[in-house]
Length: 55
Image 1 (cartoon, one colour):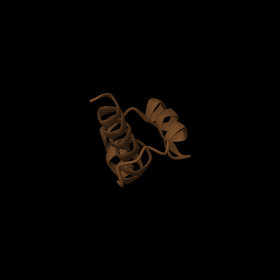
Image 2 (cartoon, rainbow, N blue to C red; image 1 turned 180 degrees about the vertical axis):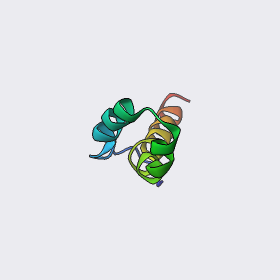
Image 3 (spheres, rainbow, N blue to C red; image 1 turned 90 degrees about the vertical axis):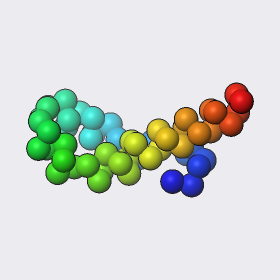
Image 4 (cartoon, rainbow, N blue to C red; image 1 turned 90 degrees about the horizontal axis):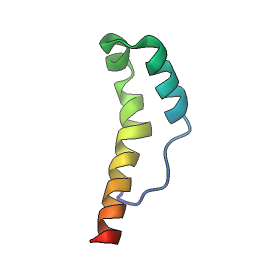
């Protein structure tokens, strides 16, 4: 994370679709790195950016 929101990764939507299909903790744990890189970290950057902008 570098703090500036640049959007979500290109694999974010496919990840969410696959999660909806699999719906298991085991699958999620196997794909946790992808979740962190494509969704969690960018979302954290978005929250930081909005917090700075509206503070």
